[in-house]
Image (tube, rainbow, N blue to C red):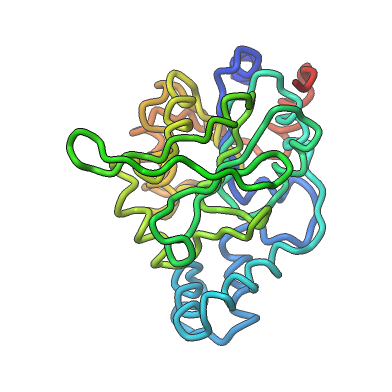
Length: 292
């Protein structure tokens, strides 16, 4: 299976989908799970005991009673500690044929790794609380924001996804961060209301950029550092991988929940029961292609 995945990378047919568990590949002070992040947020602000372990609910409480700026400041502080890209990030940045990388956590390690690469850019999900009427922001490799084209209505009258700026046509790799990230502009989809806004529209794909929808066609997703125990985790993955290929993989070690097993079967995801550290060591031991 590892040989099959490596060969698919060389053909440009794999879309890595990175979750918070990837941060466990190297020691750092960054939160590497929803549990670690909510512990950080609730240490900075008083939150009712019954929601202290619920990341989105705790974030919503802070937003409601302390202001959105307080929540954003707490998120910035949580991900402020200096950290270097992992071996996995560096290896992915070295792949000559990597059209799309999805990072579903708030760290900026992919951006750091890709600074060594030419011709790439970034698209991030943004909060309706801060950017009402916008779903994503586009950025050049240097972090400069590029204005997106306005939303349009399709034939049914529904709002269509925003078209990518013309500047993206020269990118060989697009880094997609659907729930935002620390850099370059502190965009975070984190609170209950943030997720309600997105999940209300995601089934018809409106929040997902048109370029992402194009690049995923016929390609396989490789889920690394992800779990799918919550409905939000499953919903995001399901909608982002919609209309892609029928062959996917997920490295998930140890016991899984019934909902996870059902999700793997439903999406035709082959589970690889192995420590992420071991899998990445084997994968990155393959030939590293020269960055473009």
